Length: 70
Image (cartoon, rainbow, N blue to C red; front, side, top):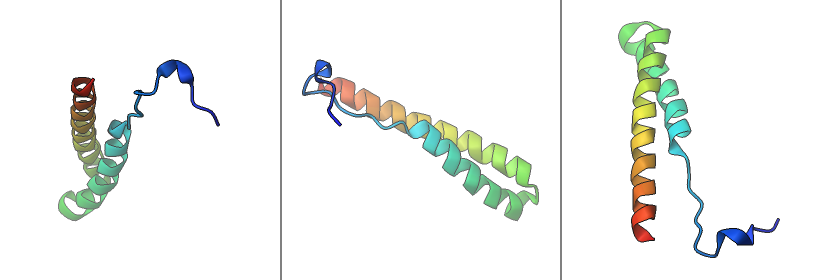
């Protein structure tokens, strides 16, 4: 596959970590939800919310770093 030359040579690929944080947080939250709360649903909700926040923060920091490099 060829890359689109209109973007220029300095264009960089960005990784969207928000979705990854959501998925990993939900999975870890289910495990802790069963162990601590004995409720799978609450653990999944709490884990997904924390994973979403952490993933969005990491994504924001990465984009800020890319913007400052240009």
